Length: 469
Image (tube, rainbow, N blue to C red; front, side, top):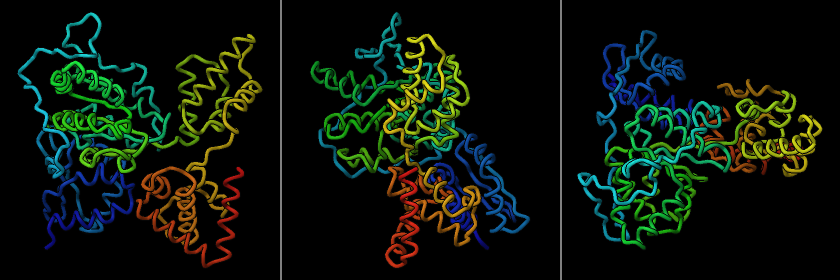
């Protein structure tokens, strides 16, 4: 007789090949098999939110996988954990010794706050201004494939800060893709649901400035006591800690104290943890404890939604043709669109005329570098499919037809060589594969280019097409 652990392990082997790596780590690695009764497998999930997300997005995959293991009469039952019951074990301690002597945090019993750089005007010293922009809400944050996992994790955190498996939440991506907006939206939603929670957003540079000031004024203990009070700490641009050993050492202790107190940490960076140079290994290891989620450049459809929402919210009158043109031409980030919009409004006001298509084309040509379409994974994938005369939707299916598999491999090869997108994200966008599949695809394409002259010509033709479109 097979045990419930063996059945679920076999299921995971199948699931892992059919979902993106980040989704697998965020959802399925957190599930524990409880028991197997006849044909019924009971699974323990860490929160009601994850249960609902599985039911909405992965029920077909779960049903097929479990029936494959247990037969057509197989049944699935969930046991949902209540927040704070201690499902997640505490990570093992690092064996790396701290550079400086250990820091002793003041006891929580001392209620007097002597250090508070974020005092809310007109309120007593204990009240901390969360430093959140009310415009950066979830209502104003458009979801797309580029940010879906990060947004899903953010909503889960806002509902149960410090009690989910996403602690810390580490969000990374290029500038202008909405990292700051998302993490502030998490903070705003948390404050809406838990008014008593102390939420604070700040940049890594601001944290360092405060620490240096505290050292100069001999107020390091007060500095640490202040951060010990935070329930949800949102730290932007943590890559700025690189090379600053004393600040890193202090933040290491702040991180540990908050984590052990089951407080929530949310971090952003323009690079993934493994790509940040100049950070101590013990800090990098802690960044990996929870969930790492990448935000990538939005595809055309998502850009269109973002631009339409922005125009509507700001009360600006633009025709659909103009917005579609801008969504096609501005592909790097949303900040470029906001810059172009500001210039259009200024020019329209100056000449006292409505915004026309001619005006838009002129502003875009002057302000968007070369007006060249950015090479993205989505753009590469559609170009490769077009070259082979196949529909992109068909190529995304799970079929193993040779021509479709080869198109996927070629798209993965160009995505790795022509974009800065991570291997995990490339695999997720092309067939829902993992990073190992992408590496294998790149190696296969490279080998064929060396041994097959006709295949090498195909690669050259596609490359020319990508660079000239």
